[in-house]
Image (cartoon, rainbow, N blue to C red; front, side, top):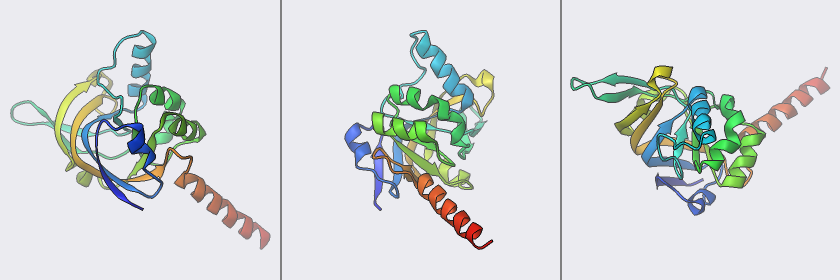
Length: 197
């Protein structure tokens, strides 16, 4: 297990050095995207229109942040925690095609994501639930917001990070998945229990 502080955008070589169990912190532009954000990005790409932010080499955070405005009317991040990532599984290959290198969320993702991580050189990292205040401390500025008409959680928030994290690599570009290991251990336990009945 190693700890890395990465500055976005990152390249394939940087991603390939990461393995399940590593800890990362991020500097640079991080964008939130949940269900609607992914659907709206897909619509733009299908129309050959540009995405609102440059996400190639970057990080997408499956999160619904709580934003507030200061006395000058500028947005700032109050707290941010991860949302359940498996809902974004249908977009796995699309996200890889856009060049996203780091996917942040909770709960892990499925086989389509596992394949995309290897194909496009990406990692999935776990943001610890319950650490919303700690994570918010790593965001120094809200650069922009897109699709706010979808509601605060579903909007895409472009945020400037400074040692944002920590995040645990739980799926890597080499085909390893912490979630596969957990499922296998759980199945072994079930099998042992069933033997005793």
